[in-house]
Image (cartoon, rainbow, N blue to C red; front, side, top):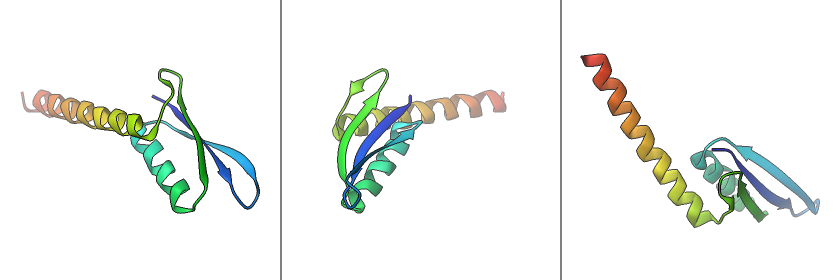
Length: 80
């Protein structure tokens, strides 16, 4: 699911948006934004609309669980 993260570059006073294809990647972008002391303005997803960081963490956890289950299914198919 795609995510758009908006943040302000403080010294330029410019609003910038970054795209991430997964919640996990979106969290990495947000971590970099916060590490550089830039102001997070929004997180959006076409499916979820405006969301917060905590919701993004839950979505990332769900993605991780789905990937784990699909890897288990794939390895099972290969062993048969």
